[in-house]
Picture 1 (cartoon, rainbow, N blue to C red):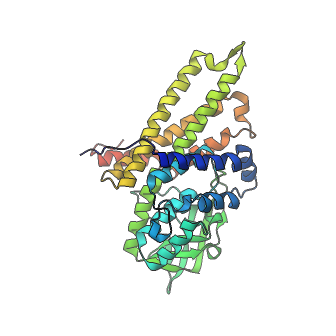
Picture 2 (picture 1 turned 30 degrees about the vertical axis):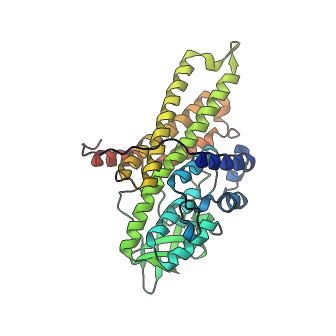
Picture 3 (picture 1 turned 90 degrees about the horizontal axis):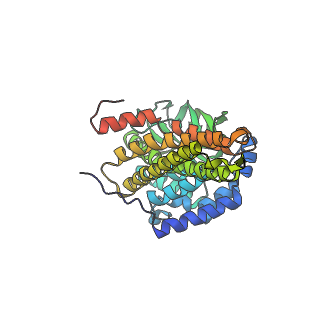
Length: 368
């Protein structure tokens, strides 16, 4: 039986959007993002503190009895839309979504204590998983317990590890919370300068055990599904910014005494992009609503959203660069930040091809 999705934004969600957008407009302008990205440490602790603690977005997925806001995936999706619009260099996807969902799935006193720290914005937590790890794919077995909770192993392409206070490490004996200082994260040179990657090396690192192996793997699998579904909203926000900025540019840029946006070829390209973004909004909102309501077909809805929104975000960013002409190719213009984020997001939490294969499997059709 098909599910009826609520794709409209509530008044509460629009108020949340306004608060986040105003903060990012004031503290996360493209020039500021680019300047921080050039340093190799793009995270802004003050911006994160305001976003996570003062506005309270870090605890949106956490029940009130555990110190959170008691909201849900729809509200978190709105936040990610705005973060995508600003290519904001904050660890929201990793800490407030992935790590939070993993801890919610553990249901132990140790996990609850850490969850309260995350919901308050006092700590940042990142899963020690490769960023391309996809829902429905086999989980890695890179870390093992060599005895007494001494964890040894190496995990590559861990997002936001350099900004984390605690890492969630999936080992053969369960899930562990490991202080980031013990994990020796080594920064990598990522394509997306606003979401840094690192290699995490554990050499007999001590951690606090949060869950047994079966519970840990189920919690991680659920978190990856939620993360992939909400990532579609980040991709939607990114695509919207690219469309809006490109329309603004072609309206003001003149050639032959006419706005270049009046040329029919460009009108067609932008009209098609508008249709793509509108469809991406429907797909991303459906995924967020399915996750929020616990719909039985949520895995299918998430796979559809990721398979579609990844491509739309990349196309929107490519059009933004191309239709800005020469200035779009320069380092000073933020278009390249959006293109790199779009390309990186297309690999994060599963490629479009992986999600297309999941759609085929769920629909019992031959895989593409």
